Amino acid sequence: MLIYIYSSKSISRYGFKNINIFVMIFTLFYIVLPILFILFEEYRDTTTLYNIVLNSLSNEEILINSVLCMTFLGLILFVYHLRGKSKYSEPLSIKKVSIINKQLYKKVNLFADILFLSSAISIIILITSVGGVSQYLALGSFSRGTNTSLSDYISSGLVPLVTFSVIILVSPYLYCYLFGVKRNKWVLFKFIVSMFFAVLYLLYNQGRAPLLLFLLPFLLSSRFMEKNKTIKLILLFIICIPLLNVLNSLFTYFSYGYYSTQEQSFIASFLLEFSYPFTNFAVRETLVDIGGFRLGIDYIYWLLALIPSSILSTIGISKNMIETLGSVNTNSYSYITSMENRGGIPVDFLTFNYYEGGYITLFIGLIVTGIILRIIDDRFIYLSNNFAFRIILLRITVSILNLMTNSDWAVIARTRTDIVILILFVLFVCLYSRMKSKMLKDNDL
Image (tube, rainbow, N blue to C red; front, side, top):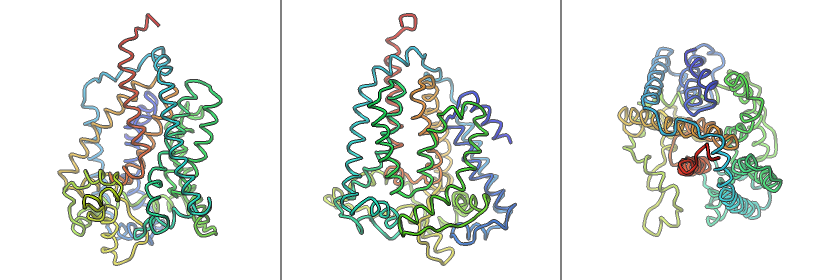
């Protein structure tokens, strides 16, 4: 209830800041879920490895770990509110925003066009190479297994295009911003076409949460969310849970040509889909005993993930030299249950930092997270009067769910490149706006 009151008041005053969404998602996964897991034992899943492991824990163990998570959240909030007033804490005036948007318009338009054309051409080449749209959509499913690779299905020379295709997810948001600045029909047309390619890529990628989170900011920025934002956000989450089953059936159809439907209650679906972040943390010591500490390698391994394998091979380095954290985590679950897992079990926000060096890196990660959330939110507040820009800020904010449930930096660098680009773009706009605002005086506008 305290978390709800905090979030509700903060959202009413400042809108959807990163700290608000972070707190609500953290509470949902690490506090609400374990409570529901204890209260509704009859709805527990007994098929997935992480739920089998969670079922083996006592209620006392589950509650102790949940209380520990509450303490971690308190530390993040303490660090977040510890910093003094920032130079970005006051919103830029609406008059200055209007002038700066006009100055940025041509630069952003060119940037959006380059990203759109290069990523759209990559998708078209991939569709052509595999023999059509249906084969392209099925490709995502066939290459998602832990023991499979894209090079098993397409030419190794085309694999970088798959990684580059994710950039298409940036273009619709940039065009939406441009259309908010200037109601141009040509920009609207480019927005519609880029949305088509973006949804096509998301259907190929077959990530249910990424698809919903990509569309959600457009709804959050609509008039529907003008009042009672917190309650409506919770209702949207409740609505999205059943949609996960619908999307799962749709992706099964793309891959195998038939629908696979499974009727489940809301609580059963919630526990099935989102138990793994808390399970990871609850059995963190067992996972590390099996897989070993990573000694900080994942804090720098993401740099290798950005470099094509062909380039690394010329200097005698192979990405296979280091087993990915996701693979280590999945194999540890298989070892615990003595069962084979066909998919992967991602590493959540808390467990990722624990894997690197135990509680030392975990506490450092919590402190750094509180600092980063404050730094980003200060810049969000600075741009809060830029109404055309809010859609981009919302896109970054809702992506916290992805970043919290799969915090492997190498995965983020490889599959969430769009969010990285948007964050860098926001930082650029902040610096540009601050520099230009010093040259402008409100009484001269």
